[in-house]
Image (cartoon, rainbow, N blue to C red; front, side):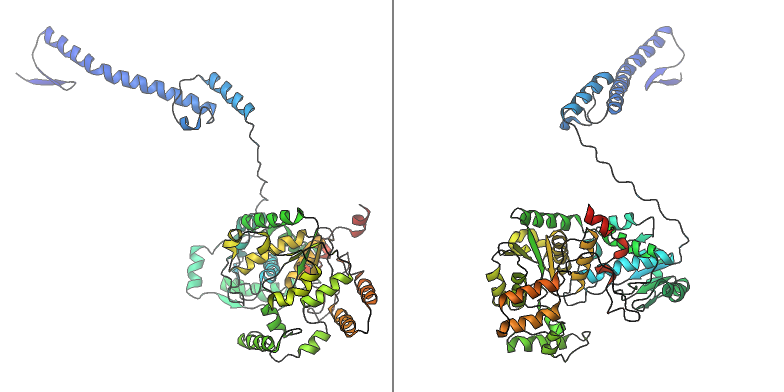
Length: 505
């Protein structure tokens, strides 16, 4: 007698109807739970599908993702009611510009040098060069070896994603080299060099592009002032402006903190930003020691000799000051602001690092203007915790405040003074007092010696600066002397609105 297996139950073969009925009954009893489970699963799945079709905003948040047996119309009605009760703002992302398609001639790596604004202008120039050589630019490396020893990376200061995407219709920018190309660089298969300063686009086409084609990767190890101020095509100049004023945004954290400082200042009325370039490094570099003690002058001299890349070592401070080549001292700027009739009660925001000589040197200024403030006095220490020991990020905060000030007064024509001046021109020729330091020093010496009365001193200071307020003007061009002509980023005239239209608006 053989054995058969039906639905897992062994039965004897060969026989009667009763056996067959028992087998069928057992099979049906075993199937019922399975059919019930399958039916329940189908029903639940149907409910889930209906819920998904309606949307993901039904019900309390804790029930999201749970199945529902509400019908689609009921769920849709509930969804509509919820939307009416709590309208959600629709935030549309700005459309990205279309990618520019071109044959890639190679890769350009750049190492910027200098402080924040020196690097800012250099980045703009490097993007332009990459664009017109049809090469891929790698996000620039920032200077970490300067006096400030700032470890900040590009993405710590600038919004790197915005930088890349906002320029994709002009140039391809990558955060880092592709792996295959990166291996070539690690093996030393690339070329590194400093380009010639103040060069035009033809230099890069004739001298630099062949090197990129030959080596595939070119590293420019100095980037400041590598593109000419003048004599460049209009589209090149306009691209420099677009990069500087639209693509180089600071990180959201820096932008938010800068906005907070501006709001705090605005609560108390108008404010003047004084870019008081009287930090230790500036005085050591320039050799300017007016008002310093003998010990301080010796300290500045030792510092100058400690930095081999500061070429000038023996400096006559007296002669340099007389030539207008020194930053104004806190005592001198106090006299100038009073002569210009700057309201004593106006807030004076100091955009600078630590002033050399501290409270002793600031006494004249704070006596004349009691509302002298800095970011450190407006904000809590916790607000600046992540910016401490990152001079470029602190400078970025000062940059934002400087742009929005009612009056901007730089005491020295360094990179920040020039770049902020140009940016304020671009924003509508906002008032920027450009001090004539050579004449100011001469007038101050006469005033301090008693040979000039206060009213005469004030009248002369006002008349000298009547046409030095950041209004529209043409750049000074000095052929073969680019360092002596007006800097493009201080007066990007090709990008500015018609000053005549501006005055009549």
